[in-house]
Amino acid sequence: MAAVAQMPPSAQAQKKPKTFQAYLPSGARTYSCAHCRANLADHNELISKSFQGSQGKAYLFNSVVNIVCGTAEERVLLTGLHAVADIQCECCKTTLGWKYEHAYESSQKYKEGKYIIELIHMVKDNGWAQPWGERRKRNGSLT
Image 1 (cartoon, rainbow, N blue to C red):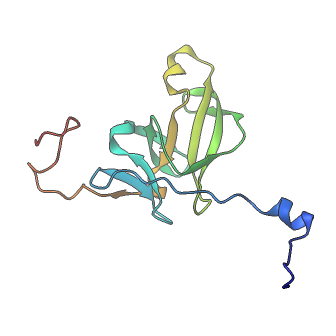
Image 2 (cartoon, rainbow, N blue to C red; image 1 turned 135 degrees about the vertical axis):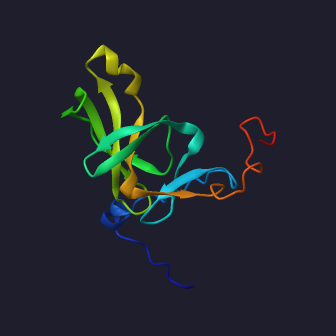
């Protein structure tokens, strides 16, 4: 009978669970991590292009995929005091931006639960180079 090697309990505790990458629909206009090309966001989730990150321009998204949130901390940003958590690409661990956890000023409450990704860390993927007239609207009909 062959002996079966087992990992010691200390090694088992250090082993991280495998994470599976989320993929956005092919053909949809998407944004991906500039460093590893993991999908990050669908263009339809883009709220605003008028944001500033620590490394330049940034976009505000309603939802993103393939990210890991850090611990929230209070920071004074250009628009006032916010509780934010840094977000990292789940695949390559690059810090991409942050998630707004709490806004202290009422005019900034719309940002809560939304995500900032800096342009330096993302690229456009899929569906951006289609000729005019072939791009589909959200309802599926041709433009």
